[in-house]
Image 1 (tube, rainbow over the protein chains, first blue to last red):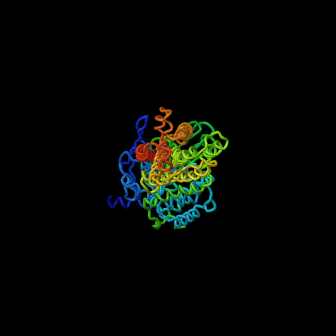
Image 2 (cartoon, rainbow over the protein chains, first blue to last red; image 1 turned 90 degrees about the vertical axis):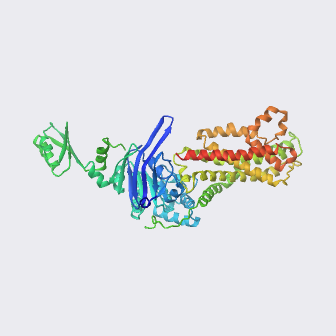
Length: 320
Length: 273
């Protein structure tokens, strides 16, 4: 361990995992390199099956790497798993609350696993339940909770021992929109408090609105790693304008010669313009349509987004 | 709210504390359904002694005297211990290993994975010993007149060794099976394996008395319950005769060591992918 690694919350260096099974060897993670600073809110974005959960599994000591190495707060995950477990809180993709216990007991016992006295654990559980709006559900059994309540309880439980690094694996998967927004606000609050967070998600919107830095993963490899703004600038920096119309097809040559426009795609009843400078394009398109006697029925303008970035990076449509 | 994420050190994590806390959790769950658990543990042995040591002698369908109730005391204590330790580990473990993520709650506790397995075995041992001790007075006091069982408790060191080794053997066997079978096989395990093991486990008769059916006397030796029941017989009712001391001690202690080692290895393999 060197000093630089000690300063990092998470380091992954050529991390690899191959599952060997009857159908043959399945490479879940081919090569992941990551460095997450303390206090950072970092996202792993990728479609289902990209290798995000396996990566989290290795970083949280639950999955044994086939190759490469990883440290959490400078501690090696393979050599000293117990010390890593003391430093992390994990919100897994599935509901992992203890069904034999009440909500409050779930938090209390987790605190005691980490060496808190039962009095301290109960007090801390009380604080967290209040923060997550679960005080009136504290004596409820786990199966009585709604999806959103259960996620907040898991999050509260993961924080009980004040972990240095919080891992959130698809925290809002399966939640209704209202609960999702509510959870985002709570997670943002934690980040504002200085909590280091590593989040995986297959929702672009979630990565974009929460994370400071994102690693885009697919097929077990990091395709790009940058800030949200940086990713948009390096890849998929175009605005996409789409116009649908009634009437005869019309000539769009004038538009493709316009400064900033990279590409124009004209199909029957639809024109799509990819451009770096969006100002005035829609107006000119409307003028062309009017000259040709066509009626515009629909117009959309898509700003540069992670979705266009993913398209440029992988050459594939993003599959959620 | 700024107190939630601030790293104020209020925990002093040690492996020992984590193990104690996991055991405290198991005891809390056990205590919650205590009455129901006691009824579940006691009902079957109670019915056995009631029918065989009270009803049958009263109606003249079974020989009088203290023979049967004396034979049944070690048998019922031993079989109840095995059934209880195994049930307390097999059912939850099978469910946790089957459901995605359910085991992670424990595995993320700050202690080595093999000690998580050890802690599980300790809990199952506690439950088995508790059940055995609970059944003892039932078997001792329920009988018809003149059927008072003759118990000799002078050899208590042997009793302690047999009880502990028997509890460890059943708990580790339970862990081994729980980590091997899937939820659909649990029912099969209890009807096809545990029930015959109990009927032929020298619970209601001594091993020596099987001499008349020699092939059966040899066949039942594959049943671990035989060794616990005969071991308890040696410690509690030596006068009725029992398997050689070296034989039951070898199987109980050796089997406990073997299956503890095997089941811990298996558990670690099942939970670390």
